[in-house]
Image 1 (cartoon, rainbow, N blue to C red):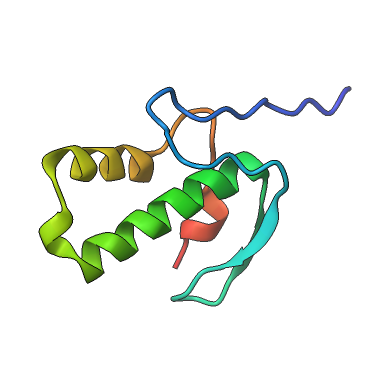
Image 2: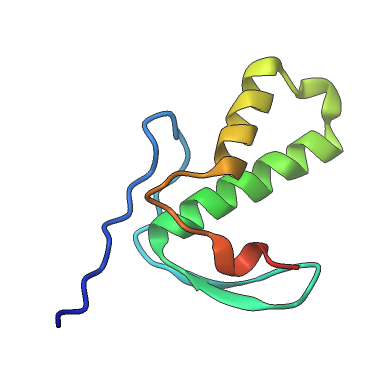
Length: 87
């Protein structure tokens, strides 16, 4: 039996940076570490960056930004961030 890997792609609405290399990230609440592929890291960075902006400058949050952030949190069927989201 072949070990098949599912190709990961970012959703069409995603306008952030696409990292070509993956990296290990640490959950700031649990301390758990997880290796994320470049695609996963791109989405993770988008979510964490957007969350930071929303917390530090809430007056800049528009309906469009809020909707895009929610889309990122829900994720895409092609991207799995499950390892890092567990607290």
